[in-house]
Length: 178
Image (cartoon, rainbow, N blue to C red):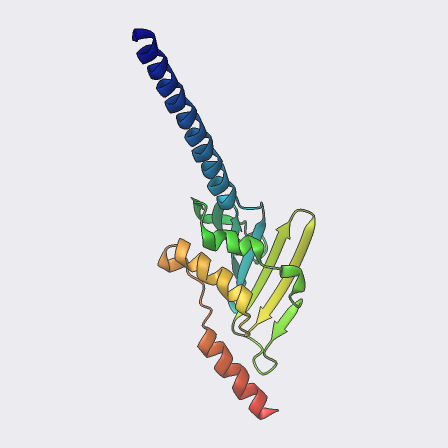
């Protein structure tokens, strides 16, 4: 009878060990799947907000890992200066920026009625693919998402003014004048 109890205990212990191993394997697979979901494909995106009247631009360089704001003086002898930098945590909005199909965007979007004002250049690189888009007083939805993300990540003094409502209204006025 003692052997039967020992045998039953060994079987029970073996079942517990097997169930534990299966559970650990399942947890590890789930952890790996959630880590893979959080992975972001490497990319580099630079949004440069120009003020031609003052001869400078502010470049916002964002990658899958970090964000850097650079003053780009356009006058002779001026050097680029880093104004702000920050490491970025993996997030859904950052992952979504990496998924934007920049190659499907036009090279240029403009409001022909306004010569100055909002001048933004966007350069996106993913692997060997590079795409540049220039926006002249024009709201483009995908670029708007990128600028919104940047504005969420930087101090208020470095936020990019890119007002969807204002730019749409300006374009409507322009179209009415044509």
